[in-house]
Image (cartoon, helix red, strand yellow):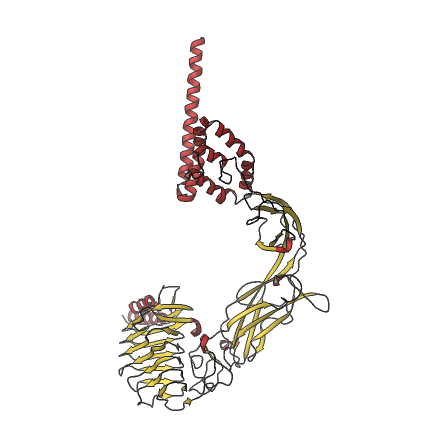
Length: 596
């Protein structure tokens, strides 16, 4: 029994440990944050953490009786909480214990977080900007809460607390009507920055007052601190990012997470040469070797950082970025006061490309030319040029195809057509921020990846073509459905429209179908003319077209019926064949009787 008891005790401890290591995600595992909260409240074996991906969530969250739940946004600056019903709080926590909420931006609603009769609550690394009618956090006298490293900007009331059990540390209060109330209870307010609040009420100890925090851009929602901000290195404790004294605000202290923001990439050679598409322009250096540069920019993240690392690669998207073809290998170290860098010395991806040979320029339907060309070895795509006076008037990157239907042209006008082959390498770029320690964990996540296509273009293959209006036999204005219109009698007949849609959707989408349509345009008007002159054939033509009409209807309305139609058609034609054969045999037998 002792061993059995020990086994179950060990199993219980193991299950408890595992449950506290597991996490659920939104929207990966659950569509809404509330659904994830409810799931964890109902089943502790699911874990104790809810990871919320970046995005905007409009909900009224309720935690009632919850025990040990951590709700964490992927990134403070990009994970937004709005009130689904603005008359209710965005988040209500009651009768709960050991709940942590961090890395969110609370934006719209009359109340942000309301705390009642709860203990062990941590509100950290959040931004509250609810507007002049919004109250960010309120707690009653029975609630034990630590409000640490948050940024309160442009709220009616930032923090309403019920007693000394509300600790307020390392926060920034800027442009609020009331910062911290009531006027008493000063002992648990410390190391906060206050600026431009109509009424600060309580500032507590070790406060920084009447100094603008120097946000990067508060109007655009970027509450990172600029260099020389008075709110840097004045908090209590240590920053997890740079291991110095904690900054105040949402991006300081031990709970924050961050990544490079607003990374953009552009071809630095865009103003060199004559082509307008930047990925086709090469910078020629003094040694006459084709090279190019890529300029990368990003927004400042934290002035206390040691620097940034710029990653690039052309072999694959995503980390690890192991580019080696520039003058400096990836990653490239960049100083903390720099937010742009030019990767120079990149060798232009160059593979000799033959010019594609245009094999066909044919008017297909009104205002349209169908253009085909041969494939070129090593080409990653093709570029189509066209114009009336010069082929360079317009250009389209058509991708890795060898035919293209060029529409929107003018009938009767001759167009110069040209096609080139492309070989383009795609460069993928990302930025991280890091501190001055040697621990890898002190480098931020990768920024959102940006990509840029660069490469070579072959010589041009040229031709010309003239789109023509497809004019059917007179009184058949159906853009080419000559026989069907003649058989069914009028242009708007549903059978005619169905066949016209079948032509556009299925026949014109591939070479054999286009060949068939071309032949039909050649001989169709003659057949239509004959049917108009011999109306007794209309019924027979309608019978002949019926299987095609049925197939077209199935393709557009009930694709699952296609096998049934095929089988039924086979049975029908088989029955007709056997019936015809039987009748033929009967005739022969009757003839033999007559002449025997």
